[in-house]
Image (tube, rainbow, N blue to C red):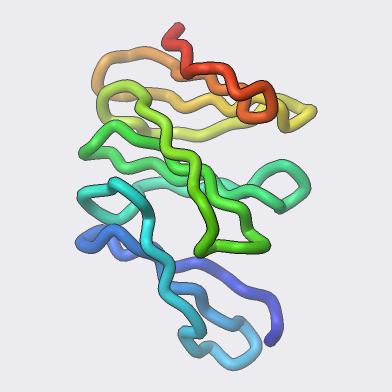
Length: 117
């Protein structure tokens, strides 16, 4: 398989994994606890983690890119999560919440709870 890309389908809570060399769907990955397909997605931590946001449920999911079917970390963030950013060292994830004008901050490596700032 060549490089892979993810395709989000907003009507269903899953992602299609597409082999860019063949342009064929090679996998479908469920996004846990989401009501709809993820609205946003970003890769961080040396491309080893994928973070998605469900704008309807107020959730952010962290997936391991080496094992997309493995355990996901599901975080409750603010209302209508919209953007995802990371600190320069990839130790802190930030999710902007359009619906309540807050920022949710998570430090996955430290297993700290999400803070709304």
